[in-house]
Image (tube, rainbow, N blue to C red; front, side, top):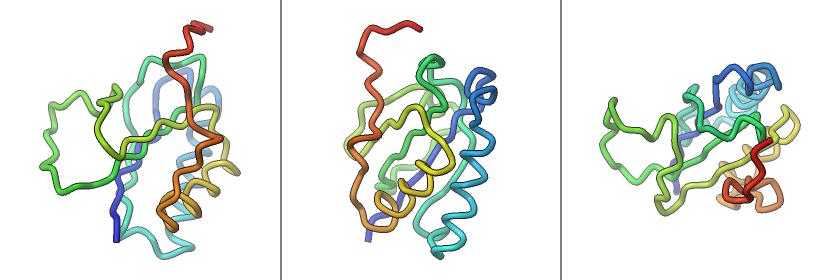
Length: 120
């Protein structure tokens, strides 16, 4: 059974766009489905894709020791099992929890495209 680490951006643009509600929806959905032991939820820093927010990054927890000074809290690392979601809402977040976290099936239609060249 896979385990995950989910980060909801807490940058000012994402917060203005509703990331607090996205974080609450994630916490509630994980609790409702009994998935807290499978997914560590936290607030990450700004990923630099403010115009695409609210942003959420889900990484498969492979047992790698978490380095408190690692840039993983504010940048995409390109690690296997890393998924970046953009334009998140509470409704989309509940879907990510149900499909990606519960069923191990990332929601491809919600993936962000950070290399699109769109700078807002």
